[in-house]
Image 1 (tube, rainbow, N blue to C red):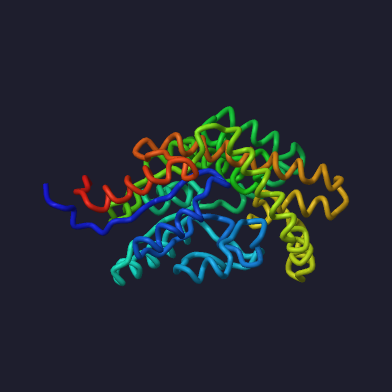
Image 2 (image 1 turned 45 degrees about the vertical axis):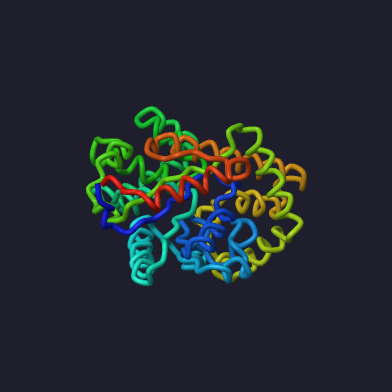
Length: 321
């Protein structure tokens, strides 16, 4: 069998705090690659410490794409991400370099690699009705409704994620089909690359929890709370009627820090709640990752040689479409 003519790409997936960014940089430097961020928090400017954004020094080591595209109050969709990522990848391939897709946002990976389905468009009247219903019953109750009609979606979406709960219920009420069903029948154009999917994750959940806790404490020491204070001082956010409903501020850690600065909890309580929210995010990411049946799993901290060998074999062998 001859070599597949499609350009190669490496997709580094995994839960938060699993070492994706560090390995992506090392891989890009070793193989002449460029990194395309697949992370819904990194698209926002000013979310640096709490989003574990690569530092300026790290970004100077290898080119990074799809970082700092929007202000925290500006919208950004998975469809926009897919278009922006494809443009970035086209440029990387044209330069003769290796695209390295690194991140933990499952919807972004799905939109890029498999295309988005032709599910119903947004309905402003229905969205307003759902928001009004949430104002009476609470988003947790609407999340429970979602769990009854679409358990898979409810497992991926946190009970406080108003935007995604609203969208999932909107799609169901408009079409009679769950959003998970729509997503399984994506009709968009698949990415024309030969892609190796690698999941970077420790084999034991307790190890990941320890990494999450250590990383959050490092963020606090680096000045995470000062970063959130600076966000709160921005006129666009200070004037927003519900800033915590913005997608940027639903990123784990930011909501808890904002509420702490509002006086809603003690510092120790804030730390515990932020770490717990990050663990919940990792649990949802594992749910998505287990559905990536063609991905190979490695712990980059303990299986670095095997991980490198898997990449090298992929780059040197034929690729089945």
